[in-house]
Length: 68
Image (tube, rainbow, N blue to C red; front, side, top):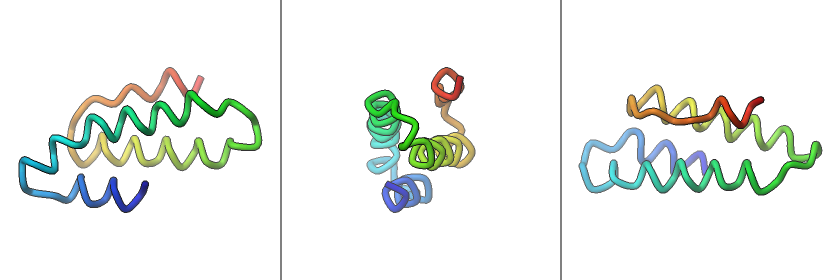
């Protein structure tokens, strides 16, 4: 997932930038799917990827509701 995030956030072409929204939906879906405590480190990595997308693209990513 990190490679996909890096590829899409560093892309300058408009074709790849359109794939940011489905990537955010995929990451949020993964977070919502696994709510067990043993996946907590994976959730932290997913939150890190969501904040990276937010910082580099400037698009709003609703991650706070999943942290709480």
